[in-house]
Length: 403
Image 1 (tube, rainbow, N blue to C red):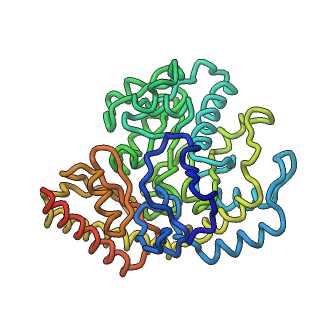
Image 2: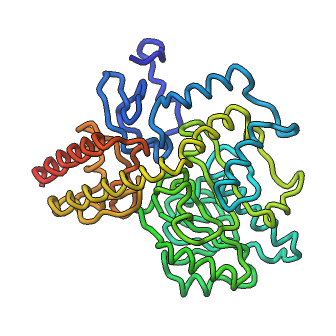
Image 3: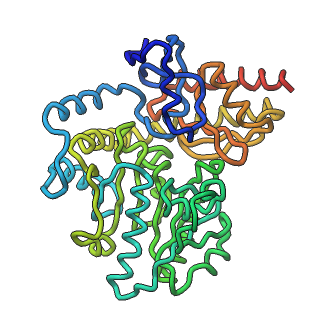
């Protein structure tokens, strides 16, 4: 049972902003791939807090490092050196293209830092007119005024006044439109290797390479949004590593802290050099507690044997989902994605599929284009893959009968 106590008859939900549509379930604890609710019913977690708890719940190594750091030091300002921050920055740079890292607290902040760094780079190079950012239709880059402008989706922009200027949005995968949009005012192109929010839509490695070449030809930087695809989710530490592409900037969050709020903007030396003292900052970003947890996460996930297992299990899951689509074509029409970021395009309304899954003890996520998003822990066992497929078959049978 929950340790949270409310006065008898009180409804705390009435005091929250009504900006979330919440299912009527509350969880008290988790263990590995499983969550347990207030009635002690258990759920197989193929949602992971929307691609966050990649190492599952209550991971013993993370609990240990959280406790050990927690009894020493939680927070100091970025006005002093933070050894835990320096250690994680070094590790991330060793494992990626990056030379420098800025730490913050959320994916939107990491994208914001990337946008500012791209514009500041051109400003420092004597090209202040280069401030525009080109993005793809369907993208989701966060909830700040700048990041909803970057995404350009009406449902997120409505009601917030004038749209932040400086963003040019082209159709997803339309390289002719992308080339035409990149002009003398373009600072950068911002892309997600896989668009999770709008339906698990992927760019092929060759597409990423084509965009990199285009950026170089146009004098624009390449920003890769790996908030959802990063930290092992696709079988590499970051999804760009499936290709030969070297980005200029990368935003990471979600899985970086396995549920502890932490994010990072990674950059090359030439770009980061323009972010001199006073140009950007964060009160909580890079605090010792977050850094200790994130370092342990990266150490675990960046291990090549671990990533090999993610790719193997992702392929097993993809094969099983393809068979599910074949057997229940009246419910599911297509499987998409890579590694442990997968989607089932539904024939029935996806909301029905998510509800039916939850009723059968499986947690999934709604995505655009009527897609059921599957984001299981990277530590998922073969038995839990089989269990998940068994539950999805129950869902398909239930929805077939509902027809």
